[in-house]
Image 1 (spheres, rainbow, N blue to C red):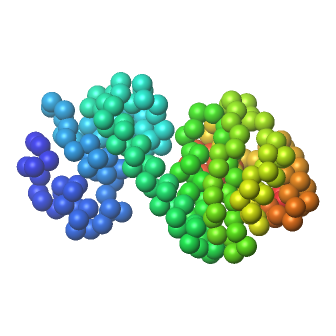
Image 2 (image 1 turned 180 degrees about the vertical axis):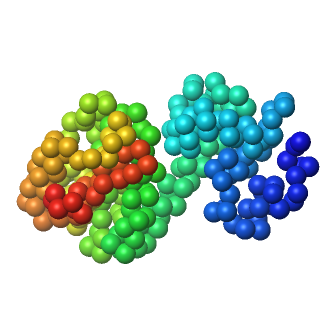
Image 3 (image 1 turned 90 degrees about the vertical axis):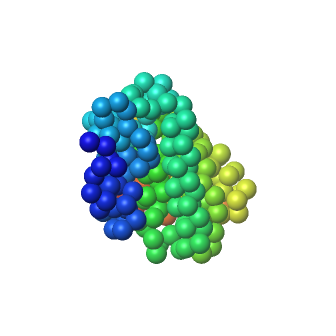
Length: 224
């Protein structure tokens, strides 16, 4: 039975319009994105199969082009559409941080960082540059590494802070292993960055470690 033959209130698109997006399951949301199924499978059935193949939304959203296109019902056009949707979400979160004091929306900060970093296959070090009211000026991916770590250079961070005339920074990086737990190396580089930035009167507010579906604030852990 195709989705068009379902009761109207059970169809994903109509359900979203009547009850809101939060009322839909992952498979139903993905089915709206897919629009159509394949022979013998509705869009919802196909969505369920894809979520199983990629071990959930996180795996699907972070899949590379080759892996994505190898799955039934997907291709380059769908990959491009999905990447555009993800980038729109990241930019919307960034705009909200630019308007608000970051301490009034810590959840938005974490959401933004997770959207930027979760699922990345190499370690990426990000800096959020904040103004005197702790609103976002810019977010930059500064350093890249392998799954074993990234080389972080305090001098470059200081240079970028001066470029943006930032008053404070929040750092973040991902652990490709998926475990959002700060390491001793993470603590050491945070201390080095804090000491370097103190010389130009710039505060380090936090360093967030992003894993698979979770994030840890070093400030909340008392590690700053």
